[in-house]
Length: 219
Image (cartoon, rainbow, N blue to C red; front, side, top):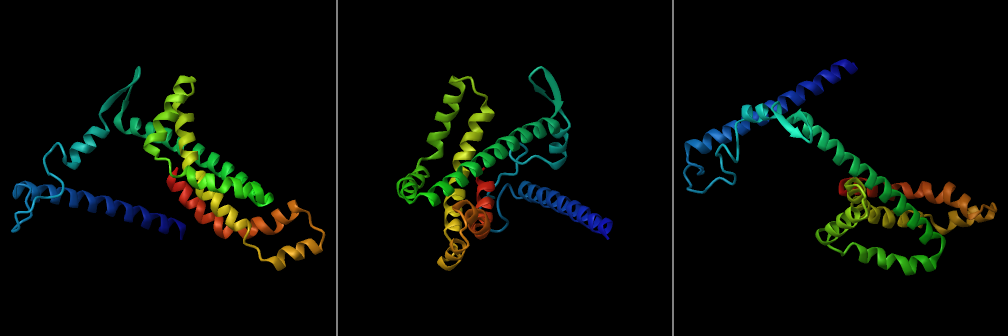
């Protein structure tokens, strides 16, 4: 059963790749036949079909197996791209984890002390008004001046993007239990920590998981 399912998934993926290649080549052929104009309209294609802008699929495949210089070593282009993709994945994962830890910590602090929420939440909202295009060069330059690897600086930027939805949604989730449930925990002489782990954190899951999806996309 599982083998048949895996085979169907592979067949679907292969068919999707073939379909994309056919559409790519068909679009290119049509553009070359009509001089990049939509037939019968005189409207130019959105994407030019010349070989520089839209090379043939076989040329793209040839480039993927060609060698490229990476420092002192030479790698096939496909491995070089995988190496860079792995580096990007590390940045995103580290930034996501840092943003998750910071966001949850801030949410718990704001839940525990109302004065912290009143003083901190407006600044958390304001932090997201800073344009990333202005912040990113500052963080990277600061990291390089302090001899920090680019991995750290870029992960810090990813954490900045991800902590906000986690902090806000986690706070809403932690505050979501109704008063009767909280009073019931108090009647059992439950401590604040016990109430947090037994009542508030389970109630926050419905708010936290959508926030984690958003944070993962932002990272």
